[in-house]
Amino acid sequence: MPTLHTLRPQKIPLRRYLARASVALIHRTNSSGEQELLFIQRAVRDGDPWSGDMAFPGGRMEAQDRNPQRTAERETLEETGLDLASHGELEGRLAELVTREHSRWRPMVVTPYVYRWRGPEDSMQNHEVDRMVWIPHTDLVRSVRLWRTSLGTLRVPCYRYDGHCIWGLSYSMLRDFQRRA
Image (cartoon, rainbow, N blue to C red; front, side):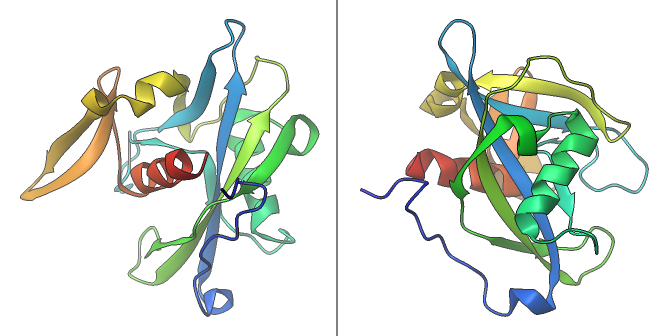
């Protein structure tokens, strides 16, 4: 069976010509020996359609980024203070997803990277993040955590944790991670 190390996940054709973004799915073993996955709760901001949502750290690729992996590492450091280049072990990449740019309808490709965190527990968050949450993996695999949430007239699958809903792209990435890990 392929692992994250040997997996060759789906890549979006012609992605070089589209806007790009990357995220980091970061997991660790806590002091009790339990596996946890890091989520951020986005800060509430006017004009942000995902304001207050639970997500993985990440963001848009910038000119100085050599590749999408560096984007995930830079954005994670900026948003959470976690230095993946120094304390993260890259385990692989998940399937790319297509979404739209933040304030436009232009397509954007999001590349999720998986890291094992081997660094210190202390961190800091910037103005884009309200809080960081390490969620036990066992809580995320329980089927009772799978709910549907109403967004206007649309019903979408999500995971509920501590009163928050993990849905959309984050939900899709989490499901892909669970299938492959």
